[in-house]
Length: 217
Image (cartoon, rainbow, N blue to C red; front, side):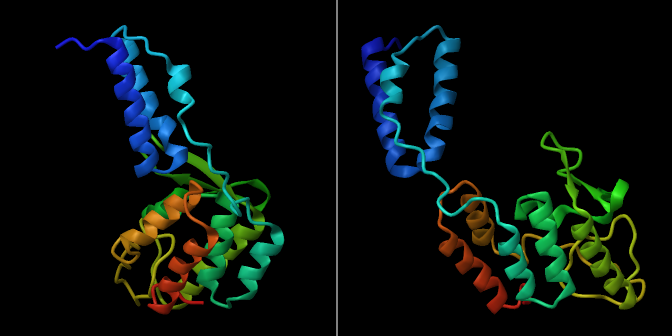
């Protein structure tokens, strides 16, 4: 069924208006670009300059600039748990999304010169990349791992990088899974990283984790 280009132009404009009501402003161009690519591959050339004028203004990540040294220090001062301190250093140093952490194991950590460490994230996937731990972050991680050894945990390449409880002897600890962190918390972290929710809303999720014993502070 052939559709007149003027009618198709109107349909796409209506679609963009619909997107403005249903998804975040920073995501609209992604959705529309998929449609643009499809239409252009079929030799359909619409007035995309007019369509783009319908896009809402991009939302700046209000309050989502990188944590300063002072911010990180405040978080470190708020906890004495070696695990929490290692996690704070790890996230601040690598910048990885919190959703990637449960899949990390010791085999994903490699030594580097000058006391640094390399971290392989999303190994064997199309999204695989490497990031790094500063000497201070690497030292915090090593201290956390030493504490686990002192609790008689046997560590090997498959041991989870971070875990909830220590198990003794030869029993293998269970890797942190998405069941430990509610899905809505993961969504919040993803939305926060895209600037779609405020720092306050994100911190409410962290507070929930602490109050329900999923993390300790």
